[in-house]
Image (tube, rainbow, N blue to C red):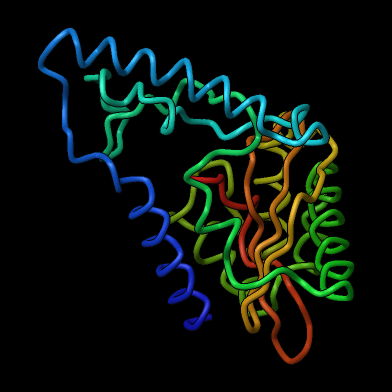
Amino acid sequence: MKIWLVISALLSLCIVLAACGNSGAGKPTTSDTATAAGATAASATSSTASSAPPALRSLKGDEDDDETGERLANTNKDNDVDFDNDLKPQPGYNDSDDGPVRDYGRPASTAEESKLEDIAVRYYSVAARGDGATGCSLTDANFAKSVPEDYGSGAGPAYARGKTCPVVLTAIFKHAHAELAGAVRVTAVRVKGGQALVLVGSTTMPARFLALQRTHGVWGVVGLLGTEMP
């Protein structure tokens, strides 16, 4: 697991760098800056929604507005370190700052894609049914062992209390039932060594990726409900 934690940290760093690359301008001090930000927002929103392939336009998009330019005019932080309003959804599944995820590693081979896509779709299917036992069987063995301590104890949310992986995952799945209700569609599969990211979307869940790890030749999910796109 330590190797995957390092890779995850590096990926997170790439995402942060991509998201913060043009934040040096800071807060606006003139009405001209605000006007320009508004024009940028309108242009970016239009291009994002129209540039998404038709098959992806029905999927719920990236739940932020970090590429609309609105962060330049927004003075309200939302519990994070940037100036964007993450509570305002960005239309369109694709988002220009998702590059570190979309370009992670290499495209999966046909055989890898088939296997990894099947695992991801099955995982979200059992999650929608609240079946924590089957969900645990699809996770990486080491990750499954860590679930009770990392998420079922006082370190995790109150609704996820439990001493076994099936009990904890069942609680987490049921808590997220509304978000998991829509059928999941895999949009891409990226592989890097023994790690993989399966990019998914649905009509009820914001765009995200599910991390998997190969241990002794067996692929397993490393995570709970996936990670939302940056």
